[in-house]
Length: 183
Image 1: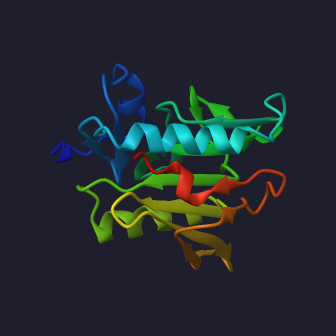
Image 2: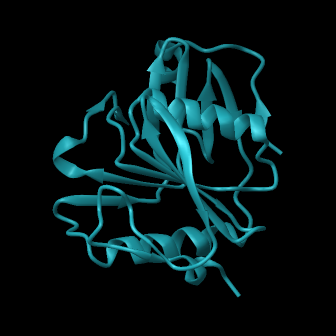
């Protein structure tokens, strides 16, 4: 289960802190530390990364799965760590060592500790910085929920459990939905 700090931190205080040892996000100034992902999480993210990278030029496009901070806003401080994000390299903005530009696609793999409320908040946060597409993967349901930015809101456009899925901004690559789930 995730744990939160009782103290609200400012952006400046947060920058002065040492890097964390594990995954953590900051939501409205509260640091939320998350336990390591369970076994099923890593192979899903890895399979998805490999499928997406297969037809994208790494000199132009980054498919990132490492732990990195994506600053949503400084006040109140909110910084997310998506499971996977695709950036067009020339559009990447970094300040104070953190990503400040919206990825073209963000992916989150649901964990048992995710609540409907916490996911709704992530959807709002990603929409607020203009992420055009967000995929939410459910290992339990073996589904991809595809949300796309429409009038400033990320809205569900489809939920799929089979077939080929192509990112909105990268139609040259695709994912075989059924192939990302470990046996």
